[in-house]
Length: 114
Length: 209
Image (cartoon, rainbow over all chains, first blue to last red; front, top):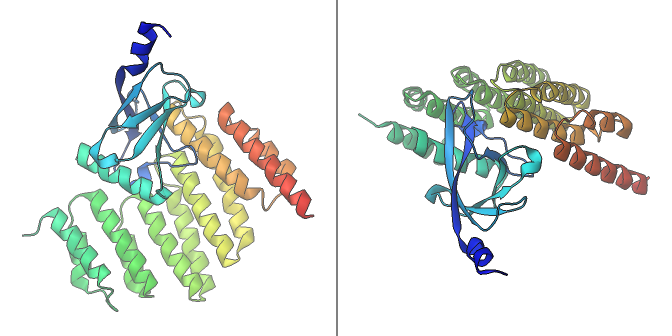
C-alpha cells in the first residue's frame, strides 16, 4: 500500500447527514430493519432538516460505516447505502427497540430544532 | 408559574404514581402545555393511562384534544385495544374505525400506511382477522401511492412500510398474491429483499405442510 493510500485510510472525513422533518415527535421517524433513512444533502419540502454529524475514515464505498458524533445519539452509526438512493445512509442504533430509536431521535430533534 | 418542562414532568410524575383516578387538574395541566407537539405527546400518555384504567369518558375526552393526526390515531387505537380487552367488541371496532379515519389525515403516505398496519396488527390480536386483512390491503395501497412521491425520503419510507405490510399480508393470503404485490415495490434493493423473505416464508410453509 502506498503512503498516500495509507494516509487516505487514516484521514477522518466529517460529514453532515440530514433527515427531513415536518415535526419533532417520534412519529416523524420511520424505522425499519435497515434503520432510519438519512441523506448527505438537505431535502426540500420539509419544515426542518435535522442535521446529524458523523465521521468516517478512508474511501467512501457502499457499506462504509460512519460514527455519529452527536452527544444525544451515543452509540449510533450510519452505513453508506447508496443502493437505496443517491447520498443515502442508514442510521442505526444497537440494542434499542424501534420505539426507543424514535424517542431518542425525537429528543435529539427537539434539542437541536426548538 | 410552571415552565413547559416542569408541566410535562409533573404530569409524568402523576402517572408514575399510578393513581386509580386521574384528577381533572392533571388534565388541565397537560392542556396548558403551549408547544403543540409536546402537548400532544403528554395527552397521548394520559389517554393510554386512562384507557388502561378503563376510565373511558376521560380517555375519549383527552384523545379528542390531540391535534396531530398520528398521535390522535395512536390515542384512539389505545382506547380501541383496551375496549377489546374489556370485552366491549362493538365499541372497540367503532374506535378502530375512528382511528382508521384519523390515520388517513396524516401528512405523509408512509405515516398513513404505517398506522393502518399498526391497527391491522392489533385487530389480529382481537381476532377480527377480516377487518385486519382489509386494513393491511389499505396499508399496501396507500404505501404504493407514497412510492410516487418526488421526494426520495418519503418514497423510500413508503416502500419500507409497503414491504412490511406485504410480509404480514403473506400470512393471510396466497404467496402468489404477495409476490405480485412485492413486484410493485419500486426500489430495487427493498423489492429484492422482500421477494427473498417471501420465498423463505413460502419454503417454511411448505416444510410445515
